Image 1 (cartoon, one colour):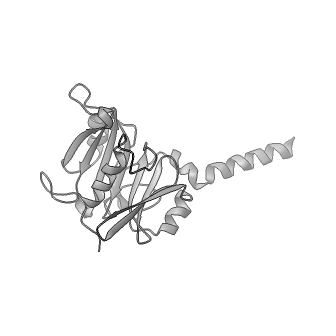
Image 2 (cartoon, one colour; image 1 turned 60 degrees about the vertical axis):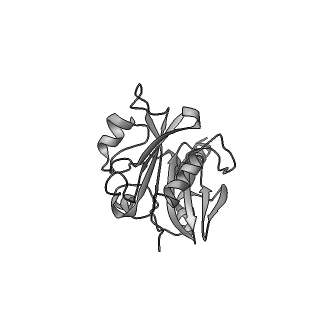
Image 3 (cartoon, one colour; image 1 turned 120 degrees about the vertical axis):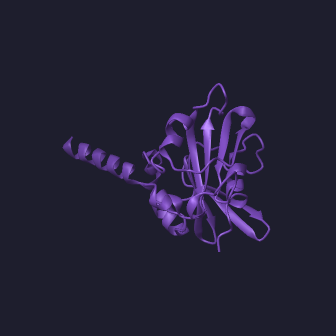
Length: 202
């Protein structure tokens, strides 16, 4: 019985030590955490610039908020980083404080020193896989001469990969990666954050 118990404890240890278990970690992002209310908690804790754009998506089920690296309604985010937040349900006059359920950040180094997430922008694809787990699903998006691979490491952790380097990261509730699915607008918003709001990286 003691041997069986020890084996079970060992199995649990390895289960919680694998990269996939990282999806359950309580990471902080510039002092804020997923699940906090957008207006009363999340934005109060962070040091983001004024939002560049804020729109309902998925027929009003969620909202997307862009904090642009490029100047927009004022100075852009420092260190060339764009932040994209998703709330559930959507932001509205009646509900100004829905939970922030997803964060994406891309380009630059803003989160490198302001988050305890284990992978940073600029890391290699191999390093991301080692820390976040193998890629379970992926899709390539091309725009002109640029391309990016959207890669799912788990149901809640994703990376954006270009030329073997991590150019963006996504944590939280997201639909399956399917750029043809018009009923879910999250991945199009993430791509807009990278290609529209973030300066091209050298």
